[in-house]
Length: 482
Image 1: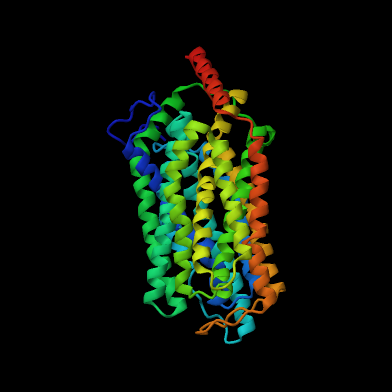
Image 2 (image 1 turned 30 degrees about the vertical axis):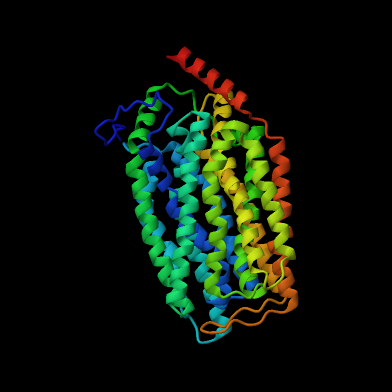
């Protein structure tokens, strides 16, 4: 197929690493859809399975684990395929263009409760396999749109600080989408009394918004991406390295191993806390279900406000220092949640705001490190393999998350957690053993993950000075070839 760009200005220059506001805005919009859908799933899918579909907590955790493992497996496959894609829309954009609508449809199908059998026990197992199947397909389309999107970051700019700015826009939309989804959840939960209908309406609204935002991204960044592609295809590339050798190179990149470790521990803390916090708020703190989005908005709202503050500060003191500052506050917040007592609502919101300071650095810093790792690999091997690096980063992260979510589900069931009966209006009262397990998963467990992430960040090898040297050597190499 022809590589000519379908725009009026296919030869738009990419010599300048500075991006205009419109391009940054459009790129940021690409994370709105995945953020909205992922946020709803992170915060509510577990509690939807137990309190709406009536699935035991252990089985619910298993559904989430299977989905995450499959999601991890398909990430490097899609990553390699995007690196090899050839079309007039370049390597990444066709995946977003054609994957957006199926992505929205299968997200919606996760939130219905079909009735397969009059026998409750048999129906639970039918529901289990239904959610496994839909979850697996939904994760495929999530990867199809999200992984090529994340791999576009180093193609839009090579400037060290500009990438941090670009990721600020991305995660402003990401956290903004999370907040929007929680606001929508609060409105829907308050307006619709039936739990099953609440989730159907919420999923439909979020699905439509997600699809439209992905198309905004495609049309907004295409000129810049296609100009990069035109420049890339004009440059003679070295012979392709076999896949087995590529994987070996990826895992021999020391800086890459640090980044995936930092990202894994940060997001284990995020997702374990996110999955358990609705249970903590309703069952332990005795809030109404419609109050849960308000608690979550306190975290995500603070994270959004702090995102640009951390981004500006990182240009002065560096990414590592910013990460340490945010994580320290977050660890204190997680520890405080464990000691919180029912009725201490104001203190709970204070801790939620403190956690938001750290959550924003978990969004910003690891993803800002990844393009630097890719350029270090390019210097060492002569090839750009964004898709493989991003694919394996997310693969290892999701294996860890799958294990974490599975353990949470099993721990809840082992502690005597009582799931709701489908159609039941009042939630069952939980035993003290289940409440203690919820508190452990809310406080100490995420705090341990965060401390491990801090340890790895301390030893992360790529500094601003080292990155400048990498870029200088890459430009010298390009001049020699030119």
